[in-house]
Length: 274
Image: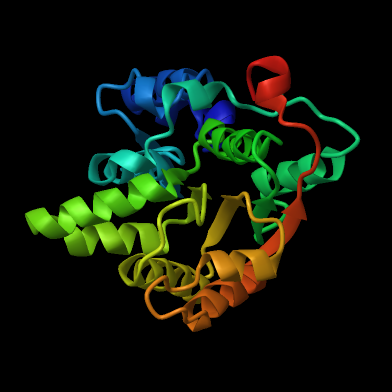
């Protein structure tokens, strides 16, 4: 038993501390078959006991968070605050295993897997026409992170902006909501620039992207606009015709993210699904 726990106790010390040692051994057996933090079978979910032998038969024990507890609690907070951060049920099936790799998206898939594995901390901007698999690939990265016990936030940009409007009107959790989306460790912004542009929309997008750049927070963006000039024009202020804010947003996105172009036929129209 002590060999398993790495304590190096003698037989007399083991007998004196047998109850504690057996409890920790059984606890570790349960942890080794961890079903995930959400289904943790411990009496105190997410908490494990650690032991330290300092000599003279004295063992100190303390309770600590397991490695999956912090990310789990963080994810719960994100989902509670932002309805749009919750990955839709249908999107949880969008994984690398269900993604159809083709010659046209092979490079994008390789890069996305590297991001999901943590080999790259750069963001990605997945650009391409409708139905070329951008959202599926972004969801695959997010789902892989969730499987690893890491936090991931998924937002469809028009829905995110609607959430911000509701928070402002209700005057509830507005500041905390904004701080969460600005600093979340990993954020997917789906359908970027799909919303109707206004001065307010441009201001919110700039605040968000500028903050995430400053925090060096990893961001995955999907958009139907396949070039920086097209995206800048899309982000033009409709009242004044000014493109300065759009240029600043796109400039920061280019600094944060590797721009990946996905081409090909509309997969949904061809196969009835993405």
